[in-house]
Structure formats: structure tokens, C-alpha cells
Image (cartoon, rainbow, N blue to C red; front, side):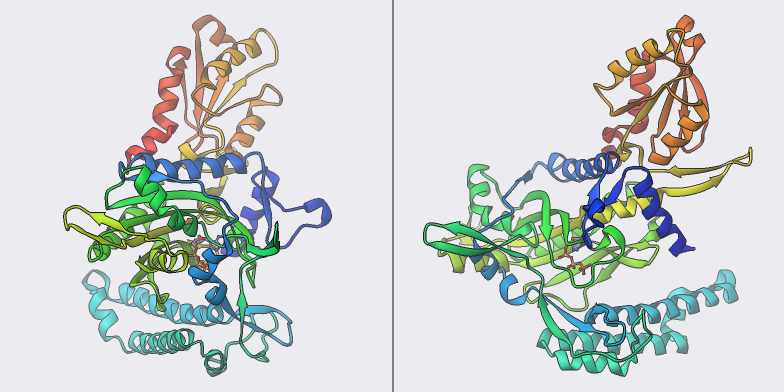
Length: 510
Ligand code: ATP
């Protein structure tokens, strides 16, 4: 069922102009995708929702747009040149390449699911008197699975931290992990693989190697002083930016989930050392609220605390969404201490500090990062919204129940017929409403067909102009999800649409 939903999402995304395979006429380019006419609108709207909620709604967060190309020393300082590696392993029979840690994590997930099944069984057996906490703490099957999970996680954490690739391989063998494609356990050794793309930049003294940024965060760190000074920012404050990032992912799969070129929306929040865990808690909660404010079922989200903390972090959590292929990371919240600014201070030789007038001292601020993938969020919205419905008249409809403010078009103006002055009236309405909303105009085909097309791209409101409209200055509006229709005055349209679909109403829920 889930697999089918995922296939439907991919084909729907293509058929309705949301996402196309990159360079398709040349048979595509692996793990690279292009956003079509409707996709670009949805993507822009998700970005706007993020930007407004982070920047516009916080008086102490400002924006930035830094360059993709950065001085090569940035990536030396950040640790990416030496440490931005994934442990990879090949299956000798299928010739498929995997991330060793992902293979192991997938194995852990099987035990997590075992526990959840056991808990569900318990819930059914004990009914109202079911005490979940006690059950989890005492049930022998749950305990056994939990022990295995702790063992695997502990061993993986140690191996990753020590860079012990041989032990990762041993763990894969011990757990009898088989290749999902060939079913074989015939593995190569585990090797490190750097994910950064590099290119050449010519300079007067020859060529120098530079990298395509693998994250947007470093652009924020290297501009910390510029923004703090020119914006007269006081701690705590944040800098937000959205933009492209590039990673030579070993296993690029699952559509736009893991791409080689993708977009991030990141915010670095600079705080007084010692207060970072309070702020970490704040952002962990605030970011989940941002997701749930879109109306997604809370059961579809969960936190996943990091087993292996990066060497610079003192707390890290992922916000995961229940995709058709399981719970996977959409966003990470990381307490990065003073690592990044400290390293740039060391490598650049420039003092990167904050003078705290209250404490009357200089120090390197600590940082909480929130980092979300725009493309993954797009996939969350598509998978969560696409529904196939059977209507009372026996017909089927595909409907994309996107949060109205994020839909590519907020409304469609549909004159019932292409004659008798109806298109002229429709156009008049279109010209007025387009100042506030992204509107679709169409006067061809039967009204039923046009409604279906708007449902399929998620347009929350359709406005139909008919002969009565000419005499009464009113129109029929139809709502996407309920298909309810009502008659309203043309003069009231702006206000009605605004209430139903505006970004303002969405942001108001935060
Ligand atoms: P993963 O473990 O899934 O590779 P990550 O931990 O490397 O992700 P981060 O470095 O924390 O990811 O990046 C922040 C966010 O950027 C992720 O939560 C994700 O939404 C997004 N992201 C990372 N890599 C990709 C990618 N290859 N394609 C699309 N989005 C990505």
C-alpha cells in the first residue's frame, strides 16, 4: 500500500508539472530533479512559510544570502575536507553500493517496529487498563528487542566515533544483514567516501581547487561578524538563509528524498555559553510546532535523538516524518557549541567574538542550528496530501489536499462557458484577485473536468462565473476538500479567499 502511494506520488508529481527528472530528454541525470510549473510555486510557498516564520516573526532573527562558492579554507576549518565522509560498502553480487551506517540503522528500525507491534498487541489485550509505560518496562519481548537495539546502537556509535571501519563490517556480518536487492551477504570492506564536489577556480597564480558548498551553514558562520556588527545584534540572535547545497551522495534514491543538488533552509541561533541547552529545547519544540501547524497528523512525526553526536555537538535531534518508506529525517536541530566560530577564528586569524555588556566580557557565542531540507519538506507535503477518493457518482478523483496557503494556486477562475460575456467577467475578477493571490484562469472544457484538474494540483477554491453572475454580481465558489459550493458576492471574494488561504492565517497559527 505504502509502496503504491509512493509510486503514485512520483507519477502524480510528473503528470501535473510538479517534479521532472533532470535533463530528461537525455535520459535523465541520476538523483537530479527539476521542479515544474506547479512544483516551483509549492516550493516557493514552503520557503516563504519558513522564511516568514523564522525571520519576519522573530525580531531577533535576520536573513542572509551568501555565495555558493567559498574560500577553500572554510571547508578545512569546518572539518568537511577531512571528515565529511560516509562509510560505504558494496554488495559484490548486486554491485549495489550502500552506506554502512544506513544498513545498520535499517536493521535497528526492524526491532523498533517489533516493539511497536508488541505494544499494540498489549493495548488490544488489556484494553482500558493498559499501562504503556509499565508494559514497555516489563514485557520480556520488548525488553529483549530493546536490549538488541541498545547493543547495535552502542557498537555502531563506538565504531563510527573511532573510525573503526573493520568493526562496522563485522557488525554487518554479525547481524547477518543481506543486500535488499540480491539477498546476498557477500560484502566488500567498508571504505570512507568524501561527499563534497570540487571544481577549479582560475586565479592569477594558477588554478585553485574550490568546493560546491555541502551545507549553507558555513556561509552564516563566516558572516557572523558582518551581520552582528552592521545589524547591531545582541545575543541571543539568529541568522537564517535558504539556498542550494551539493553532496555526492553514495546512494541517491527515493526520488527527491536524497539528491545530489538540493536546497536547505538553515538558521543558526547564537547564544550565551551555558544557555545553549535551554535554547536547544526551545527550538526543538518550536520547529515541530512549525510542522504540525500545517495540519499534518501528529502521529506522522517523531523525534529521533542522535545516537552518534558529531564531535562538536552536545545535543542533536532529528524531526522525522513517516514517509511511505518509513520514518526518515526531514530536519535536524543541533547544539553545535562554539565549534564553528572557534574554528573559523583559529583558521582565519580574526577574532570572532561577542562583547557581552552584561557580563562585561568577550567570548565566542554558542550555536543552536535548525536545518531543514526544502525538497524533503516538499515530499512530505506531496505524500501527506495526495488522496484518491471515490465520489458518490462512482467517479474517482485525485485530490492534493495541500495546506491552502502552500498550494501552487490559491484560486481558479472558471467561466462556465466561453461566450455570452462570461469570459470577460471572469477576466475582470482575475485581474483584481491576481494582485493578492496566485490565480488560475481557464475557460475551456467541461466544468467537471476543470474541477478535477484543480483538485489534482491542490487549488483550494474554484470560482465559477455563470449567467446569473452577470445580473447579480455573484459567483459560485467551490471548496476543494469538501466540494461544498456556495454563492457569494463578487465584492466579497477577496476577503473570503484571504481568510481561507492566506499565509497570514497560516502564520497566525504559530
Ligand atoms: P541524512 O542522514 O538523511 O543524509 P544528514 O543528517 O546528512 O541527512 P544534514 O546534514 O543534517 O542531513 O542536513 C540537514 C537537512 O538537509 C536534512 O534534514 C535533510 O532534510 C536535508 N538533506 C540532507 N541531505 C540531503 C540530500 N542529499 N537531498 C535532499 N535533502 C537533503
